Image (cartoon, rainbow, N blue to C red; front, side, top):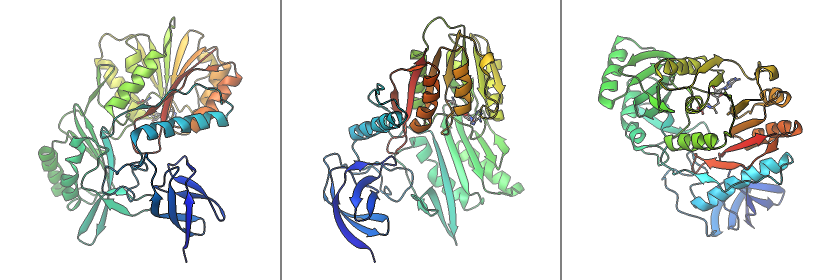
Length: 408
Ligand SMILES: C[S@@+](CC[C@H](N)C(=O)[O-])C[C@H]1O[C@@H](n2cnc3c(N)ncnc32)[C@H](O)[C@@H]1O
Protein backbone atom coordinates (compact mmCIF):
# COMPACT_ATOMS: atom_id res chain seq x y z
CA UNK A 1 0.00 0.00 0.00
CA UNK A 2 1.56 3.37 -0.99
CA UNK A 3 2.16 5.72 1.92
CA UNK A 4 1.23 9.43 1.56
CA UNK A 5 4.06 11.79 2.54
CA UNK A 6 4.49 15.56 2.38
CA UNK A 7 7.92 17.10 2.11
CA UNK A 8 10.04 19.89 0.64
CA UNK A 9 12.46 19.17 -2.18
CA UNK A 10 16.01 20.06 -1.25
CA UNK A 11 17.95 19.71 -4.52
CA UNK A 12 18.02 18.33 -8.05
CA UNK A 13 20.00 15.11 -8.43
CA UNK A 14 22.30 14.35 -11.36
CA UNK A 15 19.49 12.78 -13.41
CA UNK A 16 17.28 15.85 -12.94
CA UNK A 17 15.04 14.28 -10.28
CA UNK A 18 14.10 16.23 -7.16
CA UNK A 19 15.60 14.89 -3.95
CA UNK A 20 14.20 15.01 -0.42
CA UNK A 21 14.70 13.26 2.88
CA UNK A 22 12.08 10.53 3.22
CA UNK A 23 11.10 8.38 6.19
CA UNK A 24 13.65 5.71 5.22
CA UNK A 25 16.36 7.69 3.39
CA UNK A 26 16.84 10.02 0.40
CA UNK A 27 13.96 10.00 -2.06
CA UNK A 28 14.34 10.65 -5.79
CA UNK A 29 11.23 12.33 -7.16
CA UNK A 30 10.95 12.82 -10.90
CA UNK A 31 9.46 16.19 -11.93
CA UNK A 32 9.76 17.84 -8.52
CA UNK A 33 11.86 20.99 -8.13
CA UNK A 34 14.00 22.36 -5.29
CA UNK A 35 12.02 24.49 -2.81
CA UNK A 36 8.70 22.88 -3.75
CA UNK A 37 6.39 21.43 -1.15
CA UNK A 38 5.04 18.22 -2.59
CA UNK A 39 2.74 15.35 -1.72
CA UNK A 40 4.22 11.96 -2.59
CA UNK A 41 3.12 8.37 -2.71
CA UNK A 42 5.92 6.23 -1.27
CA UNK A 43 6.23 2.51 -1.86
CA UNK A 44 9.48 1.02 -0.57
CA UNK A 45 12.24 3.28 -1.91
CA UNK A 46 10.16 4.59 -4.83
CA UNK A 47 8.38 7.94 -4.60
CA UNK A 48 5.81 9.23 -7.06
CA UNK A 49 4.82 12.87 -7.24
CA UNK A 50 1.11 13.11 -6.43
CA UNK A 51 0.77 16.89 -6.18
CA UNK A 52 2.88 20.03 -6.08
CA UNK A 53 1.43 21.92 -3.12
CA UNK A 54 3.67 24.99 -3.43
CA UNK A 55 5.42 25.30 -6.82
CA UNK A 56 8.89 26.76 -7.26
CA UNK A 57 9.09 30.09 -9.13
CA UNK A 58 11.24 28.31 -11.75
CA UNK A 59 8.46 25.87 -12.63
CA UNK A 60 7.18 26.34 -16.19
CA UNK A 61 4.59 24.61 -18.37
CA UNK A 62 6.25 21.81 -20.38
CA UNK A 63 6.57 22.30 -24.14
CA UNK A 64 5.35 18.79 -24.97
CA UNK A 65 2.11 16.92 -24.29
CA UNK A 66 3.91 13.63 -23.54
CA UNK A 67 6.47 15.17 -21.16
CA UNK A 68 6.61 13.01 -18.04
CA UNK A 69 5.97 9.78 -19.92
CA UNK A 70 8.49 10.09 -22.75
CA UNK A 71 12.03 9.13 -21.76
CA UNK A 72 13.62 11.79 -23.97
CA UNK A 73 13.28 14.82 -21.70
CA UNK A 74 13.65 15.21 -17.94
CA UNK A 75 13.56 18.98 -17.43
CA UNK A 76 10.82 20.62 -19.48
CA UNK A 77 9.18 21.76 -16.25
CA UNK A 78 12.19 23.93 -15.36
CA UNK A 79 12.85 27.43 -16.76
CA UNK A 80 15.85 27.75 -19.08
CA UNK A 81 18.06 29.88 -16.74
CA UNK A 82 17.55 27.35 -13.94
CA UNK A 83 18.46 24.48 -16.31
CA UNK A 84 21.66 26.35 -17.20
CA UNK A 85 22.51 26.77 -13.48
CA UNK A 86 21.71 23.11 -12.77
CA UNK A 87 24.07 21.95 -15.54
CA UNK A 88 26.83 24.28 -14.41
CA UNK A 89 26.34 22.75 -10.95
CA UNK A 90 26.69 19.23 -12.37
CA UNK A 91 30.07 20.18 -13.85
CA UNK A 92 31.18 21.86 -10.60
CA UNK A 93 30.18 18.84 -8.52
CA UNK A 94 31.95 16.33 -10.78
CA UNK A 95 35.13 18.43 -10.70
CA UNK A 96 35.01 18.93 -6.93
CA UNK A 97 34.65 15.17 -6.50
CA UNK A 98 38.09 14.75 -8.12
CA UNK A 99 39.79 17.55 -6.19
CA UNK A 100 39.07 20.47 -8.56
CA UNK A 101 36.82 22.38 -6.14
CA UNK A 102 38.56 25.64 -7.13
CA UNK A 103 38.08 25.18 -10.88
CA UNK A 104 36.57 28.12 -12.73
CA UNK A 105 33.31 26.91 -14.26
CA UNK A 106 31.82 29.45 -16.68
CA UNK A 107 28.07 30.02 -17.02
CA UNK A 108 26.52 27.35 -19.25
CA UNK A 109 26.41 28.08 -22.96
CA UNK A 110 22.83 26.95 -23.68
CA UNK A 111 21.71 26.23 -27.22
CA UNK A 112 18.11 26.65 -28.24
CA UNK A 113 15.79 23.65 -28.05
CA UNK A 114 14.18 22.42 -31.26
CA UNK A 115 17.46 22.15 -33.15
CA UNK A 116 18.24 18.46 -33.01
CA UNK A 117 18.96 17.04 -36.43
CA UNK A 118 18.84 13.37 -35.48
CA UNK A 119 16.19 11.22 -33.81
CA UNK A 120 15.92 7.49 -33.26
CA UNK A 121 12.30 6.35 -33.28
CA UNK A 122 11.09 2.94 -32.15
CA UNK A 123 8.13 0.94 -33.39
CA UNK A 124 5.79 -1.32 -31.46
CA UNK A 125 3.04 -3.30 -33.15
CA UNK A 126 -0.05 -4.10 -31.11
CA UNK A 127 -2.23 -6.11 -33.48
CA UNK A 128 -3.07 -3.66 -36.25
CA UNK A 129 -2.12 -0.66 -34.16
CA UNK A 130 1.33 0.86 -34.65
CA UNK A 131 2.98 2.79 -31.88
CA UNK A 132 5.75 5.00 -33.26
CA UNK A 133 7.84 7.17 -31.01
CA UNK A 134 10.26 7.09 -28.12
CA UNK A 135 10.83 4.78 -25.16
CA UNK A 136 9.09 5.67 -21.92
CA UNK A 137 11.23 6.81 -19.08
CA UNK A 138 12.94 3.76 -17.51
CA UNK A 139 10.45 1.44 -19.25
CA UNK A 140 10.36 -0.69 -22.37
CA UNK A 141 6.97 0.69 -23.30
CA UNK A 142 6.69 3.15 -26.12
CA UNK A 143 5.21 6.64 -26.14
CA UNK A 144 3.44 7.28 -29.40
CA UNK A 145 4.52 10.71 -30.66
CA UNK A 146 3.12 12.87 -33.41
CA UNK A 147 5.54 15.70 -32.92
CA UNK A 148 8.57 16.44 -30.74
CA UNK A 149 9.60 19.98 -29.75
CA UNK A 150 13.28 18.98 -29.40
CA UNK A 151 13.84 18.10 -33.06
CA UNK A 152 13.98 20.05 -36.31
CA UNK A 153 10.75 20.66 -38.28
CA UNK A 154 12.22 18.56 -41.12
CA UNK A 155 12.41 15.60 -38.73
CA UNK A 156 8.92 16.20 -37.36
CA UNK A 157 7.52 16.15 -40.89
CA UNK A 158 8.81 12.59 -41.33
CA UNK A 159 7.03 11.10 -38.30
CA UNK A 160 3.69 10.48 -40.06
CA UNK A 161 5.21 9.02 -43.27
CA UNK A 162 7.54 6.78 -41.23
CA UNK A 163 4.66 5.55 -39.10
CA UNK A 164 2.81 4.63 -42.32
CA UNK A 165 5.96 2.91 -43.64
CA UNK A 166 6.17 0.88 -40.41
CA UNK A 167 2.77 -0.63 -41.26
CA UNK A 168 4.28 -2.08 -44.46
CA UNK A 169 7.92 -2.81 -43.56
CA UNK A 170 8.67 -4.55 -40.26
CA UNK A 171 11.49 -2.38 -38.94
CA UNK A 172 11.93 -1.88 -35.19
CA UNK A 173 13.87 1.38 -35.15
CA UNK A 174 14.33 4.25 -37.57
CA UNK A 175 17.21 6.65 -37.06
CA UNK A 176 16.74 9.79 -39.13
CA UNK A 177 19.34 12.51 -39.64
CA UNK A 178 18.42 15.70 -41.46
CA UNK A 179 21.50 17.26 -43.04
CA UNK A 180 21.88 20.19 -45.44
CA UNK A 181 22.74 17.74 -48.26
CA UNK A 182 19.81 15.40 -47.61
CA UNK A 183 18.12 13.12 -45.12
CA UNK A 184 19.68 9.86 -44.00
CA UNK A 185 17.43 7.02 -42.83
CA UNK A 186 18.76 3.95 -41.00
CA UNK A 187 16.26 1.14 -40.37
CA UNK A 188 17.00 -1.78 -38.08
CA UNK A 189 15.21 -4.87 -36.85
CA UNK A 190 15.97 -8.05 -38.80
CA UNK A 191 14.13 -6.72 -41.84
CA UNK A 192 13.85 -9.07 -44.78
CA UNK A 193 13.51 -6.98 -47.90
CA UNK A 194 11.90 -8.72 -50.86
CA UNK A 195 11.56 -6.98 -54.21
CA UNK A 196 8.21 -5.38 -53.30
CA UNK A 197 9.67 -3.97 -50.08
CA UNK A 198 12.64 -2.54 -51.98
CA UNK A 199 10.31 -0.87 -54.49
CA UNK A 200 8.24 0.43 -51.61
CA UNK A 201 11.38 1.95 -50.02
CA UNK A 202 12.33 3.55 -53.34
CA UNK A 203 8.86 5.16 -53.59
CA UNK A 204 9.11 6.25 -49.97
CA UNK A 205 12.53 7.84 -50.55
CA UNK A 206 11.12 9.74 -53.49
CA UNK A 207 7.95 10.97 -51.80
CA UNK A 208 9.54 11.80 -48.42
CA UNK A 209 12.71 13.17 -50.04
CA UNK A 210 15.14 10.80 -48.33
CA UNK A 211 18.68 10.83 -49.71
CA UNK A 212 19.86 7.43 -48.44
CA UNK A 213 18.21 4.42 -46.83
CA UNK A 214 20.14 1.72 -44.97
CA UNK A 215 18.42 -1.39 -43.63
CA UNK A 216 20.25 -3.63 -41.15
CA UNK A 217 23.62 -2.38 -42.42
CA UNK A 218 22.83 -2.67 -46.15
CA UNK A 219 22.65 0.59 -48.11
CA UNK A 220 19.40 -0.11 -49.94
CA UNK A 221 19.43 3.09 -51.96
CA UNK A 222 21.32 6.35 -52.22
CA UNK A 223 19.58 8.97 -54.36
CA UNK A 224 22.28 11.45 -53.47
CA UNK A 225 24.84 11.91 -50.71
CA UNK A 226 23.38 13.05 -47.34
CA UNK A 227 26.20 15.46 -46.67
CA UNK A 228 27.08 18.35 -44.40
CA UNK A 229 30.02 20.73 -44.36
CA UNK A 230 32.61 20.26 -41.63
CA UNK A 231 35.29 22.98 -41.62
CA UNK A 232 33.73 23.97 -44.95
CA UNK A 233 34.57 20.56 -46.45
CA UNK A 234 31.63 18.45 -47.73
CA UNK A 235 31.44 15.22 -45.71
CA UNK A 236 29.03 12.31 -46.13
CA UNK A 237 28.89 10.55 -42.75
CA UNK A 238 28.56 6.78 -42.61
CA UNK A 239 24.95 5.62 -42.06
CA UNK A 240 24.12 6.38 -38.43
CA UNK A 241 27.72 7.43 -37.74
CA UNK A 242 28.43 9.85 -34.89
CA UNK A 243 27.60 13.51 -35.46
CA UNK A 244 27.09 16.32 -32.99
CA UNK A 245 23.32 16.42 -32.36
CA UNK A 246 22.71 19.86 -33.85
CA UNK A 247 24.36 22.24 -36.27
CA UNK A 248 24.36 24.98 -33.64
CA UNK A 249 25.96 22.62 -31.10
CA UNK A 250 28.59 21.58 -33.58
CA UNK A 251 29.39 25.25 -34.36
CA UNK A 252 29.59 26.09 -30.64
CA UNK A 253 31.97 23.21 -29.88
CA UNK A 254 34.17 23.86 -32.92
CA UNK A 255 34.32 27.57 -32.00
CA UNK A 256 35.19 26.73 -28.39
CA UNK A 257 37.95 24.32 -29.49
CA UNK A 258 39.49 26.76 -31.99
CA UNK A 259 39.43 29.54 -29.38
CA UNK A 260 41.56 27.37 -27.05
CA UNK A 261 44.21 26.20 -29.53
CA UNK A 262 46.93 28.63 -28.43
CA UNK A 263 49.89 29.68 -30.56
CA UNK A 264 53.07 28.17 -31.91
CA UNK A 265 52.04 24.55 -32.48
CA UNK A 266 53.28 22.54 -35.43
CA UNK A 267 50.51 19.94 -35.46
CA UNK A 268 47.10 19.22 -33.99
CA UNK A 269 46.31 15.67 -32.89
CA UNK A 270 42.55 15.01 -32.92
CA UNK A 271 41.72 12.01 -30.73
CA UNK A 272 38.28 10.34 -31.11
CA UNK A 273 37.90 12.33 -34.32
CA UNK A 274 34.64 10.88 -35.69
CA UNK A 275 34.25 11.87 -39.34
CA UNK A 276 36.19 15.10 -38.81
CA UNK A 277 34.11 17.66 -36.91
CA UNK A 278 37.23 19.15 -35.35
CA UNK A 279 39.95 17.75 -37.65
CA UNK A 280 38.58 19.52 -40.73
CA UNK A 281 38.22 22.84 -38.89
CA UNK A 282 41.69 22.48 -37.34
CA UNK A 283 43.22 21.74 -40.77
CA UNK A 284 42.48 25.31 -41.86
CA UNK A 285 45.20 26.32 -39.39
CA UNK A 286 47.54 23.36 -38.75
CA UNK A 287 48.51 19.93 -40.07
CA UNK A 288 46.32 17.36 -38.31
CA UNK A 289 46.74 13.73 -37.25
CA UNK A 290 43.26 12.33 -36.61
CA UNK A 291 42.60 9.06 -34.75
CA UNK A 292 39.23 7.33 -34.55
CA UNK A 293 38.08 3.80 -33.72
CA UNK A 294 35.07 3.50 -36.02
CA UNK A 295 36.18 2.29 -39.48
CA UNK A 296 33.21 3.80 -41.41
CA UNK A 297 33.86 7.19 -39.76
CA UNK A 298 37.53 7.07 -40.78
CA UNK A 299 36.51 6.09 -44.32
CA UNK A 300 34.07 9.05 -44.44
CA UNK A 301 36.82 11.41 -43.31
CA UNK A 302 39.26 9.99 -45.87
CA UNK A 303 36.68 10.39 -48.66
CA UNK A 304 36.12 14.01 -47.62
CA UNK A 305 39.86 14.68 -47.54
CA UNK A 306 40.25 13.48 -51.12
CA UNK A 307 37.88 16.27 -52.24
CA UNK A 308 39.09 18.96 -49.84
CA UNK A 309 41.01 22.02 -51.03
CA UNK A 310 43.05 24.57 -49.11
CA UNK A 311 43.71 22.44 -46.03
CA UNK A 312 46.98 21.72 -44.29
CA UNK A 313 47.95 18.02 -44.52
CA UNK A 314 45.64 15.65 -42.60
CA UNK A 315 46.18 11.98 -41.79
CA UNK A 316 43.28 9.84 -40.60
CA UNK A 317 44.03 6.58 -38.79
CA UNK A 318 41.70 3.95 -37.45
CA UNK A 319 42.76 3.08 -33.95
CA UNK A 320 41.06 1.71 -30.87
CA UNK A 321 42.23 4.33 -28.39
CA UNK A 322 41.05 2.28 -25.42
CA UNK A 323 43.15 -0.75 -26.25
CA UNK A 324 45.93 1.00 -28.13
CA UNK A 325 46.12 4.66 -27.13
CA UNK A 326 48.50 6.91 -29.05
CA UNK A 327 51.78 6.32 -27.22
CA UNK A 328 53.68 9.06 -25.38
CA UNK A 329 56.55 8.91 -27.91
CA UNK A 330 54.14 9.46 -30.81
CA UNK A 331 53.42 12.99 -29.53
CA UNK A 332 55.84 15.91 -29.57
CA UNK A 333 56.11 19.01 -27.42
CA UNK A 334 54.89 21.06 -30.41
CA UNK A 335 51.57 19.23 -30.64
CA UNK A 336 48.28 20.63 -29.50
CA UNK A 337 45.95 17.74 -28.68
CA UNK A 338 42.17 17.84 -29.07
CA UNK A 339 40.35 15.03 -27.29
CA UNK A 340 36.61 14.28 -27.43
CA UNK A 341 35.99 10.76 -26.11
CA UNK A 342 32.71 8.86 -25.63
CA UNK A 343 30.91 8.91 -22.26
CA UNK A 344 33.37 6.47 -20.68
CA UNK A 345 36.16 9.01 -21.10
CA UNK A 346 39.74 8.38 -22.14
CA UNK A 347 41.60 7.03 -19.14
CA UNK A 348 44.22 4.97 -21.04
CA UNK A 349 44.80 7.78 -23.53
CA UNK A 350 45.22 10.34 -20.75
CA UNK A 351 47.85 8.14 -19.10
CA UNK A 352 50.01 8.22 -22.25
CA UNK A 353 49.36 11.95 -22.65
CA UNK A 354 50.49 12.42 -19.05
CA UNK A 355 53.75 10.61 -19.89
CA UNK A 356 54.29 12.54 -23.14
CA UNK A 357 55.86 15.94 -23.83
CA UNK A 358 52.52 17.47 -24.77
CA UNK A 359 51.87 20.82 -23.10
CA UNK A 360 48.41 21.76 -24.33
CA UNK A 361 45.25 19.65 -24.47
CA UNK A 362 41.87 20.99 -25.53
CA UNK A 363 39.29 18.65 -24.01
CA UNK A 364 35.67 18.19 -25.01
CA UNK A 365 33.52 15.86 -22.94
CA UNK A 366 29.92 14.70 -22.75
CA UNK A 367 30.41 13.30 -19.24
CA UNK A 368 31.72 15.57 -16.48
CA UNK A 369 32.44 12.57 -14.20
CA UNK A 370 34.73 10.71 -16.62
CA UNK A 371 36.28 14.02 -17.66
CA UNK A 372 37.12 14.89 -14.04
CA UNK A 373 38.67 11.45 -13.50
CA UNK A 374 40.86 11.87 -16.62
CA UNK A 375 41.73 15.48 -15.77
CA UNK A 376 43.03 14.27 -12.39
CA UNK A 377 45.46 11.94 -14.21
CA UNK A 378 46.70 14.91 -16.25
CA UNK A 379 46.86 17.24 -13.24
CA UNK A 380 49.07 14.74 -11.44
CA UNK A 381 51.44 14.96 -14.41
CA UNK A 382 51.70 18.74 -14.10
CA UNK A 383 48.77 20.00 -16.19
CA UNK A 384 46.70 22.95 -14.95
CA UNK A 385 42.99 22.92 -15.65
CA UNK A 386 41.80 26.08 -17.41
CA UNK A 387 38.32 27.63 -17.14
CA UNK A 388 35.66 25.05 -17.95
CA UNK A 389 32.85 25.95 -20.33
CA UNK A 390 29.67 23.88 -19.89
CA UNK A 391 27.76 23.53 -23.14
CA UNK A 392 24.12 22.45 -23.24
CA UNK A 393 23.06 21.12 -26.60
CA UNK A 394 20.55 18.69 -25.09
CA UNK A 395 17.95 21.15 -23.85
CA UNK A 396 15.50 19.57 -21.40
CA UNK A 397 17.67 16.52 -20.71
CA UNK A 398 20.06 16.12 -17.80
CA UNK A 399 23.06 15.83 -20.17
CA UNK A 400 25.76 18.45 -20.23
CA UNK A 401 28.96 18.76 -22.23
CA UNK A 402 32.05 20.80 -21.54
CA UNK A 403 35.07 22.27 -23.25
CA UNK A 404 38.28 23.30 -21.54
CA UNK A 405 42.02 23.46 -21.92
CA UNK A 406 44.76 21.83 -19.85
CA UNK A 407 48.27 23.27 -20.06
CA UNK A 408 51.71 22.74 -18.50
C1 LIG B 1 31.90 12.07 -28.69
S1 LIG B 1 32.29 11.33 -30.22
C2 LIG B 1 33.28 12.59 -30.92
C3 LIG B 1 33.48 12.54 -32.41
C4 LIG B 1 34.03 13.81 -33.06
N1 LIG B 1 35.06 14.44 -32.27
C5 LIG B 1 32.90 14.78 -33.35
O1 LIG B 1 32.80 15.77 -32.64
O2 LIG B 1 32.14 14.54 -34.29
C6 LIG B 1 33.39 10.09 -29.75
C7 LIG B 1 34.02 9.32 -30.88
O3 LIG B 1 34.85 8.31 -30.31
C8 LIG B 1 34.78 7.17 -31.13
N2 LIG B 1 35.21 6.03 -30.32
C9 LIG B 1 34.47 5.29 -29.44
N3 LIG B 1 35.23 4.35 -28.86
C10 LIG B 1 36.48 4.48 -29.38
C11 LIG B 1 37.70 3.80 -29.17
N4 LIG B 1 37.79 2.79 -28.30
N5 LIG B 1 38.79 4.20 -29.85
C12 LIG B 1 38.70 5.24 -30.72
N6 LIG B 1 37.58 5.91 -30.98
C13 LIG B 1 36.47 5.54 -30.31
C14 LIG B 1 33.35 7.13 -31.61
O4 LIG B 1 33.25 6.35 -32.80
C15 LIG B 1 33.06 8.62 -31.83
O5 LIG B 1 33.36 8.98 -33.14
